[in-house]
Amino acid sequence: MEQLYVFLDDYRAAPEGYVLVTTIDECKKLLKEHDIRHLSLDHDLVSKERNGMMLVNMMVNEHLYADRITVHSANAVGGKNMYNSLRQAKTDHKMPLATEVSLRPLPLHSYPQHMLRHYAVSE
Image (tube, rainbow, N blue to C red; front, side):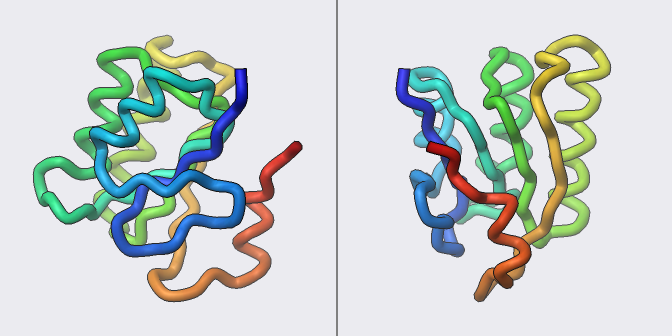
């Protein structure tokens, strides 16, 4: 099965090699139908209610995961809440322990080269 690299954001451009999704529904569909190597999540989306935190809750409840999950939100509170929920899911054994979870906020307008190394797509 082809592994996908998915970037959930309604403002930023996706790094090279990533599939850009702008809603949690698009993201959830990919999680259900594909093997996701790396999933990078934003908190603030167009819908204030259907945001990244709602997706994280759905992922935990429905056991939908990627090999690596990065929270890239610039919203300090929302991003930290998403990260903490994912870490707690690992602690509670609701998520595979092998899943890597990281919090790496990205700027809104441009990505410094050193930040893009985290998004390198392996062939």
